Image (cartoon, rainbow, N blue to C red):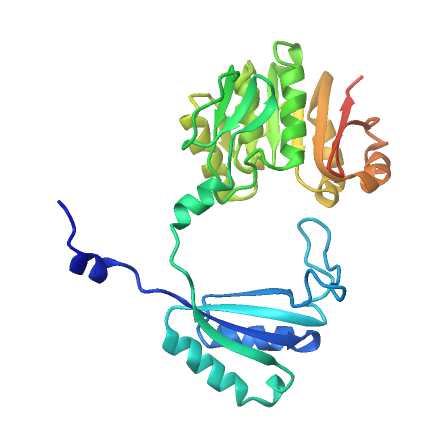
Length: 311
C-alpha cells in the first residue's frame, strides 16, 4: 500500500545528533567516561590534526589496544539519540573544571543515510584465485567463479577481505584434491570461512572450533547457508589427528597453542598458521622449534602465512 507523505514523516526515524569537540590528550579518557555517563551512544576519537604537518602516528599491535588513549589534540565525536541530549551533555561538560582545555564545541544532526546500502557497498566479491571467490549475498558471482563461498559480514572475524584469510584460502585452494584435505581442523574458526573453503574444495571431514559461542554459531549458520558439512563446537570437539590444522589467530595465542596444534597433526600432516606479522616470523619459529620447523609460505601487505609438515 502506498505510504502518504504524512505517514512517512511519522514513521521516519528521528535524526541522531553529534556533539563534537577538541580535547587535549591527557583528558581524553576522563571526557570519554563522562560522555558515557551522559548517555552517549558512542564516542569516537580521532587525530584533530590529521592530514596536516602536525599529524601523529598512533597505532598498536593488531588486536591489541593502542599505546595511548588519544592524540595531542584529539577530536571526540559523540552520538546521542536527540538534540536535547547532545546540548545537555555539552552544557554539563563545559561547566566541569576538567574540560577547561577543550574547545570547538559543536552540536549537529547526523545526516540520514541508508546504512544497510552504505555497509554493503564496502563489501564486494573477493578473489582468492581466478576461479575461487568469496561473494556477499547481495552480489552475483563473477563469471570466472567456479567455487563460491557466500558470506556476509557479521560478528565473527573472517570475510575474506583481510590478507590473513586470503592467504589461508589460497593455501587450501593449492591443495584441493590432495590428501591434505582428507581431515581438516579449523582452530579459532571465527566466521567459519576457512572450514567452509576446505569443505567446498573437497575436504572429507572438517571440524571448526572456537572459544567464542558467537563464532561457533556463525560458522554453523554460514556452513548451512553454503550447503557444506562442518562439525562445529568448542575446543573439546577436537579429537584425534588431522591431515591439515588451520589457525588464523594472532602471534601471541599461536605461540601458546604450539604444543596443542602440533600434537593434532597426523603423520605427513600440515600446519597452517596466520595472523602473523612479518617481523614476528623468528619468534614463531622459535616457539614451534621443539615440535616442527615453520617456514614462511606466503606474504601479503606485511602479513605472513607460516606452514610446517609433520615428518
